[in-house]
Length: 265
Image 1 (cartoon, rainbow, N blue to C red):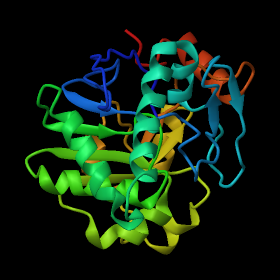
Image 2 (cartoon, one colour):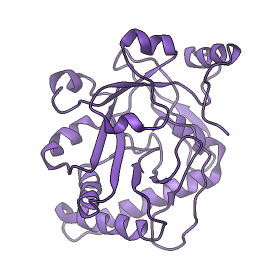
Image 3 (cartoon, rainbow, N blue to C red):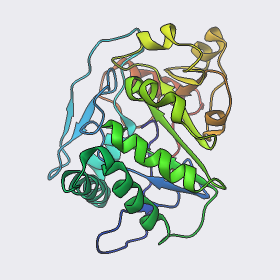
């Protein structure tokens, strides 16, 4: 959800899901994506959509918290690269197809888990699996499916940022030890972070500057390492932002000062 990428997929044809092995920020892991915005039911300040066919961007943020507004970094990658859009919609289509054709809807997560696991086997082994650089857990059985995969692959670490705090809370007693969720602040359910601090220990806050992070007492994460800790952290806004927006101005100022502006190589 929170990174601009250079997508380098291995193409696998047929009825398997598509993963990537690296991007401009992350390496040595499998990365799984579905369409940004369309699969983010609890998105708030970052709600952005790239048209499936044209890539045209639509911004539709909801002011549901005091988080600064910013465009979804993942949606911007879909806008720029047709191959990225195609791969992400391919994944969403296959998952929906498995869900909708299941004989027992309540057990559809088993079939989805089998699809995910079979697809992972087609790629080189990786210790780390990043779920949703783009997209989110758009329905409960889908999160259950990923949890089942993680439980069956205990030697690997699975992690994700999410604004679907309701689904997380519903399933929090079932989460396996190798499945790491980070709450992404700026969604429709931010109030749950205050209500259930024992559940949502890892929280990611997007900030415009290093000084903002320092004022909040947060370390800035540049490689997802904080996703395995037990405390909140910050992410610096980056990527292509709407012209004239505060986010764009913050990035421009950092560029002028020779500071961090993004992960492009």
